[in-house]
Image (cartoon, rainbow, N blue to C red; front, side, top):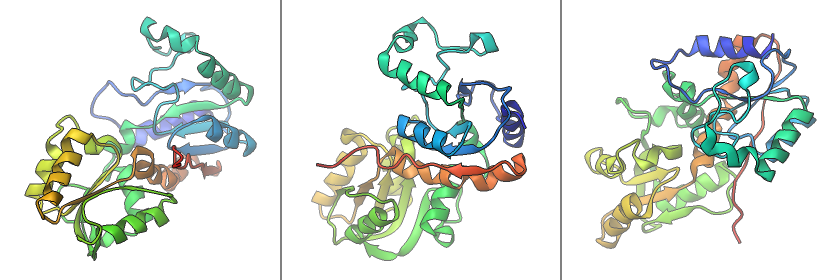
Length: 281
């Protein structure tokens, strides 16, 4: 199969209900024959080097390659792609971007972003991977969300330790008393804990859905963090664990191969982790 045939099969398998999407080619040759596919959370330089060493020539990434949320390619007019406007000219001339582009091209790799389709599939494929990795299938509440869980009662500190082990993290951020109960959880992966356009949603949900522990990807200090911190200071059993965008969404890309393999026949698919993006000193 050619790259464009693999991507076409993916797009057909998960149609989107809107025309505007960030699921786009970032760089490469859609006409190339696919040798091996890598699913990744983010195509950073280390991931690209590992992919090249594994003989991968198609990377399907969840997040942007070129350090901007718009996610339009910086090059590709000759392929008929819509590219980012002149306000992104600085990126096209930036030495970091140019060296990364050189690395990708020297290894004959095409990169395609699959973000919206992952989240609009029913069930959400990012949450599907999270649930599978945590082993929490039986703890998911039978409501309209994929982020409410009723787990066996534990403490906030023990739950933090569970995540550190599962996600191979040296440290996690915790708000609240480590000995307080953790049983009724909301897990808002990635940027979902910013509220999905409504910054008050995570706090409102915590109250209305009887949540004692909020598990976050990203959040802001003056909204959910402040709310949970105040609740804990008032003696209420409310806690928060912040794991980061990468650590809450990467498991979805780890298990994405299960969905993708039937679409591409016998083309090998591997998962390459980005790993914890920051060091703790």
